[in-house]
Amino acid sequence: MRFQSYFNTAIKIIGLYDCVIPLQYFLKQYFAQYKKHGSKDRKYITHLCYSFFRLGKAFYESDTAEKLSLAIFLCNSKTGEWNFLFKEEWLNNWSDDLNDRISFVQTKYNSFSVDDVFPFADEASISLDINAFSASLFIQPDVFIRIRPGYFNEAINRLRQHTIPFNIVDENCIELSPSINVAAILDIDKEVVIQDHSSQQVREFFKIIKSEIENQKSTINVWDCCAGSGGKSMLAYDTLQNITLTVSDVRNSIIQNLTQRFAKAGINNYKNFVADVANSKPGIQNAAYDLIICDAPCTGSGTWSRTPERLYFFDAKRIDEYALLQQKIVSHAIRSLDDGGFFLYITCSVFKKENESIVEFIQQEFQLELIKTELLKGYYKKADTMFAVLFRKLK
Image 1 (spheres, one colour):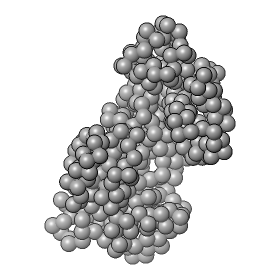
Image 2 (tube, one colour; image 1 turned 90 degrees about the vertical axis):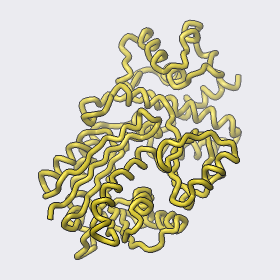
Image 3 (cartoon, helix red, strand yellow; image 1 turned 60 degrees about the vertical axis):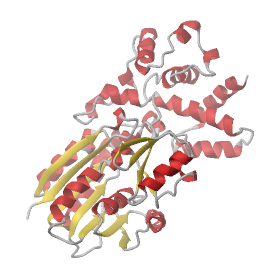
């Protein structure tokens, strides 16, 4: 039976996987080795593997087959092809409503709580809804794109021409099904940027900065000190418009990838350098920036609905390790902030030690005024959850 074979293959892969590399790359390597799996086979097996890890720490002691069956029940609104795995009672209680499915599992496993999926409530940020966040981990997030300035009508028309269902969330933010191949329809980085909804909400922090600075200076001097792939820099470039941009990260390969992306985006006038900001003061003597963006390395816990394997293998000791790293980064980066300049600290974490505790650290160590802080609750929108805080250096 084909779907029984998919089930068995998923169990095999789960047993082999150790989270050394992201699950998507492990699966790619596995399917490259076992070429008997066609595109439809790969789709079903991949879905099963991701569903298993979506249960996180819940049913951790259960055998793989039992946990995978529970994952199928909880992560799918329809029985689909999996009814052969379940008794009639389970099929009769298979509801479109996730909360109903959770409630039924609780009747069968008295010790189960949805919070078992994410058993780190004591470490969570103050305003995180643990129950809602935990439940959101059962659901694959949507894809969000940001339409860049000047391309809105063209992008919308092309989506309509291809009869692609979409939802205009706000301003230039478009929500799409994760099954859509955006690159086949729109020019990525030139016309649109693939960027999560919560990440796009950082735009509101940039608007505050723009309103405060644009009447004082013709150009805003910006340093993105942990630039990564450059998503926040591109958002700053499109929102603030008149900026002098500097980007840095810890590895040359990251900067090279960013450079290629910027070229496609038409961002040509910028500086870049490699720096480990956590362990040394960056080599930018006498630099004084109007805005420093610090999208800090973190646990990534706010993105675990996209990468559930990281939740499954997560060790809470990592929280303290990242918090210490973040303190080092902000301590070195802030020293390059001009008087009256803004410091924007961002994580995709839901942990207090990486968020509110870093805010307290900055307030204790530096003469900065807190302007705005927010936990961007993507779990209500099939998006990532992020934390952002904006400071201003006192003159």
